[in-house]
Image (tube, rainbow, N blue to C red):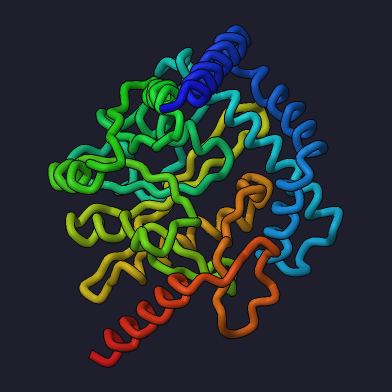
Length: 331
């Protein structure tokens, strides 16, 4: 590591520590109003990301929303994300008692309940509302709840985020060891959560799913693969904002796994549930992120956002998956 990068990493770390120290001086009820102010400010000045958000909304919903409505949704998305980041910085102050005040859980199917022992469950959630505290909320009820560590270019930041994301005692698992550890963990009746990233690279072995009726996107196969191998329940999770402050976590009915289920069909099924939640509350999703970087080379693709590009490995992945689905349907 060169000296410039070393000093930059140190400055980033110190800046984040100072910001966290300041945020932790405030009661948690002040964080959402503060986040809404900061988010509105960033939305006003962040022209490039703002344009990405507008393009994403147009690609996903077409003419469902007019220009002003898309602007309002995008602005609220910025505000909710800013509040989420402030609350993440506040995480060291979390206790089980404070979490009981901040959040509650709505269980649609009793099999999904985190306090139910001996039943392996994989909870899947999107980058919506306070996705950072979703794991913390479930961990309040589950005796043990692993968190997959996110890789950072700055390793010092990785240490900080791991501490914040495991404030209620979760175990942090490095990405390199996640598959094997989670497989063993689920086989013993454990539970864990995964935050879904829509933008995997084709070489990372994703599954192509159809999002918002027409946008093809590479999605992680990990939840479906683990469910098929371990018999774990696959449960989509929605995080909802409470008007009075705090959150309600909705645990949906487990995705049905049958002898005819495949990684592809299960992945599409749990994404459909998460997408339906996004459609109900579009302001909660992170629209400023480039979700659809890859555009198929064939067919009508004019509705894709401006930043999407043709990429041969993506086309190849689509062809391979289509061929596999046709073969499976024949057999």
